[in-house]
Length: 220
Length: 222
Image 1 (cartoon, rainbow over the protein chains, first blue to last red):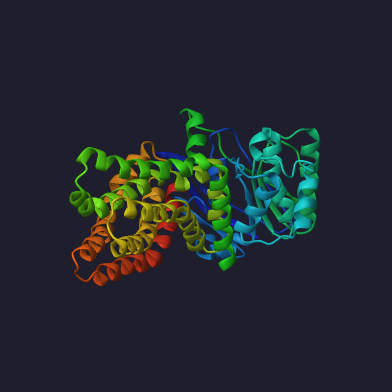
Image 2 (image 1 turned 90 degrees about the vertical axis):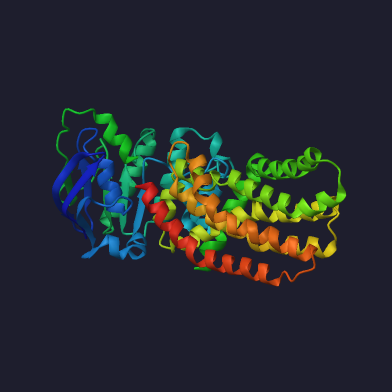
């Protein structure tokens, strides 16, 4: 179970949200909604431990994630705005390296299976620099297929740049993960086919009159 | 645990092999600096012999500084650094792997090339070997301390200049003892103390800097 307790976020002298509390049991899809510039990405980065909350704390299984650190990250798969794909590595090398650096292990067969599942079969030995945006996103998402045993997934706009089939595949993957008792936290404008009982939503307030793009930039 | 260290080294070496221009720039810079200094100073063999260790060391130091901004910048830009920060393996080991890979593609080739410069400047076999040992001990310190500077200035505009300003004062003791060791060998004084001090710097940097780089990276990525 992941909980946020009395979270406050300030970016560049602007208060994005304060006193935010919510929790998600295992097997829940937690969707962070809100207009641009309300701190969705900042909230996700806080939940990963990349960004220190201005106030409050995030708890995983009851412990503050800033104390759990590596123990928490073992349970976490994060896909952010940036794909984390190296231009100068092939698709297969990218997946292999990112899985290993994350401290996980996967056999070559599992890697091939994951790439097949995201529709990149046949592209294994292509340099990532020759891929389209959507294909790069798929390389990043292939990490999820290798991380199915990882309980918590935090996904920032996972559906961006994907085509219709890609979206359908990913929705199915997310739904399956939740059915297996995993927790998925995401920001998206896409509907994911999950039972209403397993769905939760956190709405971030409307932005103040100040320019909205700035806050999103600061969060990147 | 050790696996992640080796994996990071292997990854960075593979990337370096695919971006040869970056690596060759540094080495080319080193060769150019060392070879043009004698042209400016004039062909006086004794003078060249006495300045050789200093020239090689200064060039190695500048080459190291030149290569620093790239250490984390690419990983930061494409998001792989974020993934490293969220690894369940200790960040210090990942950082150590990156610094080791940096040394393998800058410090080590520079050191090997210096053998040729030892011959070119005609500084004798004993002095050349002392110079090589001092570079072998000193250049990893440059990579490790440089990594702290590169991590602190990550994502800043004009970070390259700031990195040099930050790390230069810390590089100076390495330069003094590195070039000093060769000078001492040339004048027949014991050089062991210089090399021992360089070794001490290296151990100190190995223990302390990966931890500092980890903290700096977490701050930079916020």
